[in-house]
Length: 83
Image (cartoon, rainbow, N blue to C red; front, side):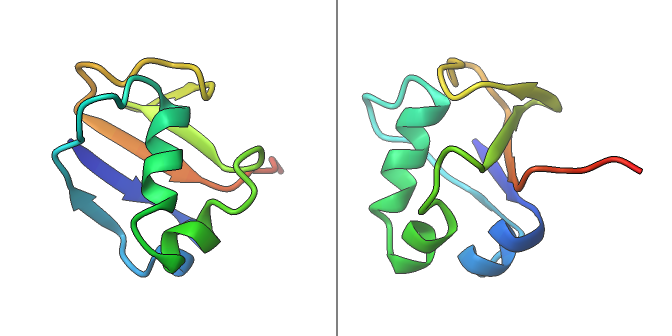
């Protein structure tokens, strides 16, 4: 699965994207975020406030309880404002 990071999430993680094989038990975006936070301090810092980081699965905005099974790409980004 491809993970993509945008804006300050990218800056904190230190990479724009990565391809990962997720371990068993990762069923939702929230599960994925909790697992990522355990991968190192840069991930813990990027996702320290899980409530404000947004996610999209295959270019569709989703909530933390969205299932990740079958996803090709999951993107993480901070809240956006329009203009």
